[in-house]
Image (cartoon, rainbow, N blue to C red; front, side, top):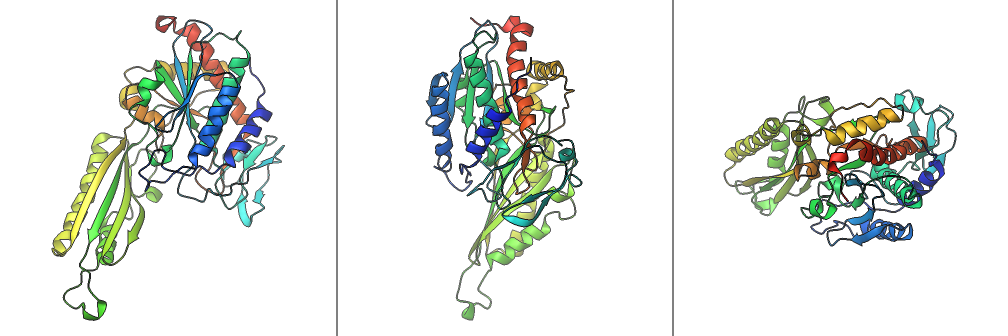
Length: 419
């Protein structure tokens, strides 16, 4: 049985999206920004209000709760992240709802030149008659991943309001800092205590993702020799010039995000900061395979060594740290949660589609840490920018998928049943 959650989902997403929760990679704290706590604490209160049990906000910034099982079955986790991406303005988000979308071009009140066109984004052309949520033109919307939060909260309220629905124990977790690769604390898998889990952090209806990029982050520090420019001849070593050489020597026509697709990885310079005395270059390295990721790290180190050799008076360091790994490496050993999600889709009349994510989710890290966690669709589109949008009706489909999963698990997986 499918339920109509349109108005509840609309209300929740509009309310959550208006709260600034942008994360900050440069911050060492957890969560990386205090503003994330504004939404986390709101969700903590809302979970208590709807009757969830074991509700708490952990010291590493995750809101957790339990929906007790009504039948023997496996314990399932549902996760979404509250932070929004640092790449685009997320302050002052003004969500708006276009009821009964007419199929034409969508304009934005705060940027009259901006256009969201079904000709450019064909998935939008499939949503005529739907209720479309966008921002106002100068910010992202934050459906990534507040749509996932809204979906899980709506499903949780429904399960708690209808104890006659048969399902096993359900654990909920809302995480911070996913956008900067720090959403999963090493303490989270044990705290969740589930057989498997799902993130609701995907795109178009039907997408069930069981493969992601493997990811590393890199920071190159170039330290030059500083001296007054009036007396610099033969003495100054300009760190800015050396940093520019490093960037220029990296592949430009290949191996960048704008030149790759499909299963190709990339090396992406995200930002540079500093001055003539010292420069920092931050990069992300991505590949679907471990060997390919290692090769990209080796390439970056070779470029740094080559530039260092041209100027021994400078100091160039390259630090690479692991972020997450392709969840496929572990899921392929036990496809139970993936198969369950595919069957739930089919039960709703949707043909599931699995394509590799050119990105990652909290599920990548959770899967690596022993909790199999594929990623499920929410409907979000054009994320991380001002053209972000989502269909309320797509979110309803995702909510029904969440509910269907809990019921199917009781029917299909008696071997994993728990009291």
